[in-house]
Amino acid sequence: MKWILKRSTACAAILLSIGLLSGCEEAAQQQVAPPPPSVIVETITKQQINPSTQFSGRIEAVEDVSLQARVEGYLMARPFHEGDYVKKGTLLFELDPKPFAAEVRQKEAALKQASAKYEVSLINYKRGKRLLPKGSISAVDFDEITTAKITAEASVAQAEAALDAAKLNQGYTQILAPIDGRIGASNVSIGDLINPSTGVLTTLVQQEPMHVIFNASETQILDAYELRKSGQVPALNELSLNLELSNKSMYDQQGKIDFIDNRIDPTTGTVQIRASFPNPDHVLQPGQFGNIIIASSDPIEALLIPQVAVQEDQKGRFAMVVNNENIVERRDLEVHTRQGIYWIIDAGLMPNERVIIQGLQRVRVGAEVKPQVQQIKPFADQQ
Image 1 (cartoon, one colour):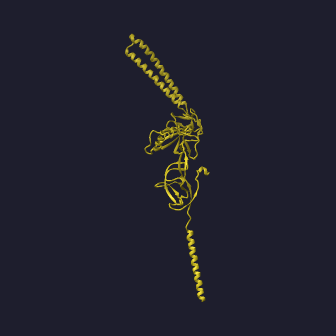
Image 2 (tube, helix red, strand yellow):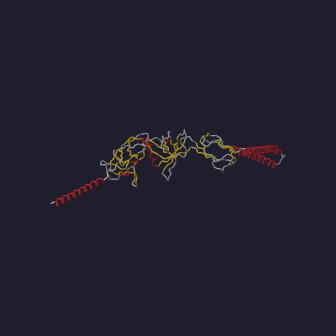
Image 3 (tube, helix red, strand yellow):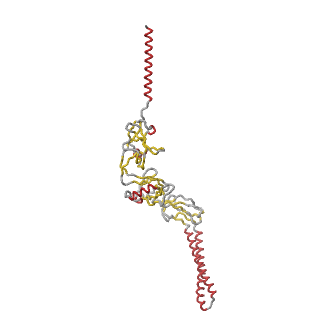
């Protein structure tokens, strides 16, 4: 009887142990299943906006002059500081003028000599003209007198031209600023022998105004002309342009389009456009890059999606949407243009749908997620 009781107790202990192990396995299985990943979503809505178009541009000077010598001589003076703002007519370089002054005096003497010979030939010509009808001289003698007069007259003209050239070269010993602008670094030093082959002595850049060069596609140009014909937008040269600088700050002056090229580049399908911007504080410098922003003055209603929510693959741009059952769906998008940190959507989404803006790396199509609503803000607002 005791053996039976002990056996029953052992069996009960074994069954209890099996039950406990089974319960532990079920608990372990329940712990393995992870909860749905959390994602940040934004509910997209239609908003009133002033649509804008953005173009990448480069800043160029209206006038950018490379100064070179036109005569040969030793550099005697360079009365400017590199980087200075100079006025038109300011002396920048001066070559040794002594050889050129001597050349001028020599040409002046040659002109006097030629003029004296001409005066003699003119006297002989007038005398011969009076004597010829009287038969005092022959026709051959008069022809020689006339030839001598013409030759002397040509010598005077030649001497005058030589003197003008000498004076012109003398003037080239002083290199003056042809425009108002900022002077660059000098490539020559006092005492250097310079000539037209020396190359660029320095550069001078006009600072006010500045040009911004950008390219628009053929389609954009045609659309602009169509809108102009319908009266929806002003003429291109009447548009007010804004400039975003490379540090993302907005330039405090507005510009105007002052040139549109007369042909479309067949290799890029774009046309070059030039805008002029005031530069009173010399903030803009040649070689800088910026973004031209053309904004519409009439607001429109548009569906916007944050740029961070838009992905791209071989099929095109798309976004991940969380439906009413918190299941992830893919939506292929047709985007229009950028608007700040948003894309304007033409097709692919409906108002009040929730798009994932954070946690995209943790989701897949058809998976369940735990959405948390958060309104995305521009970077400037987050600082």
